[in-house]
Length: 113
Image 1: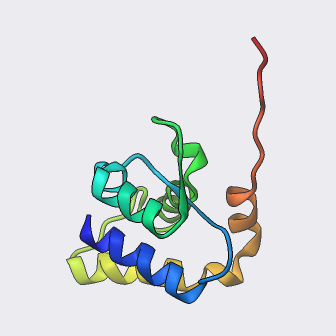
Image 2: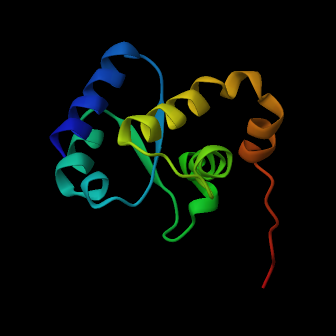
C-alpha cells in the first residue's frame, strides 16, 4: 500500500500541473483507503477496471503473449533457463510488433440491453 502511495506522489511530483487519471485493477492494496486518501490529497483520479475483466488489463494480454511464445508446451531444465526465456521474449517484443499490436488493440464489442 505504501509503495502505491509513493508511486502516486512520484507521478504527481513529475507532473505537477496536469490532470492525472490512473487506470488500476482491483487489487486490494490499490483500493484501500490509504491509497484512495493519497490520491484525493494529490488530486489524482483512480479509475478501477471492472472485476473479472482481464481482457481490459493490458498486462494480462501481454502475459498471454509471453506464455504462448515461450512457455506453453516447453520444458526448461533450470529456473535460470526459464527466466532467460521470459526475458528474451520480453526483450524482443519491439521486433515483433505485429503480434504485440494485435494483442494490445482496443477492440471491444458492446451489447445493449
